[in-house]
Length: 163
Image 1 (tube, rainbow, N blue to C red):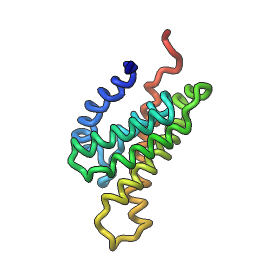
Image 2 (cartoon, rainbow, N blue to C red):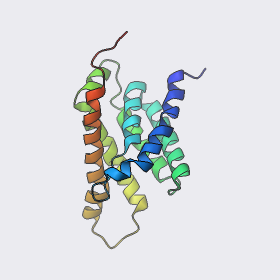
Image 3 (cartoon, one colour):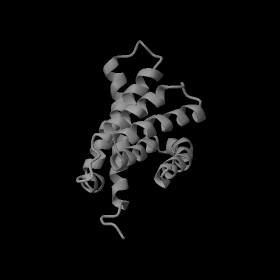
Image 4 (tube, rainbow, N blue to C red):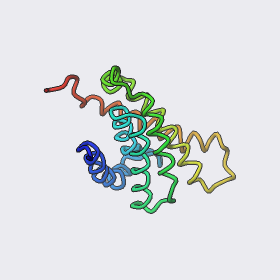
C-alpha cells in the first residue's frame, strides 16, 4: 500500500515547480537562482531515508526535465545523487537535530553543490571558459544561495511537535 506521505511529496512538487519557474527567476542575483525543489528533496531525504531520497530525486529530476524542456537526464541524475547524499544524514535519533539546526542548511549546501555541479557539467556549452570559473558561477554560487534560502526557511519549521 502506498503511504500518504509518498503522494504528498509528489503533489508538493508541482506548486513548487510553478514557483521555481515563475517567481524564483525574479529573485536572481546575476543569473544565480536558488533551487527550491532541492530543499524539498533534502527534507524528504532526511525524514524518509536514503533510498527514498534517491528515488524521489529521480522522480523530481525526471518531472523537472520533462516539464521544463531541459536536457533529459541532466536534472534526473543530479537530483538522484543529491537525494542519495542527503539521505546519508537520515537517522531517527538525529532527525530533529538535522532539521531544526544549522545542519540542515549545511546538508542543503552539500546536496546543492552536487546537484549544481552535475547540472553545470551537462548544461555548459562554452568550453572556452575556465573550469574553476565555471564551477564558481554555475555550482558554488547557486549552492550558497540555495543554502541561504534553506536557512531562512528553518525559521518556520516548528521546534516541537503539536501532537
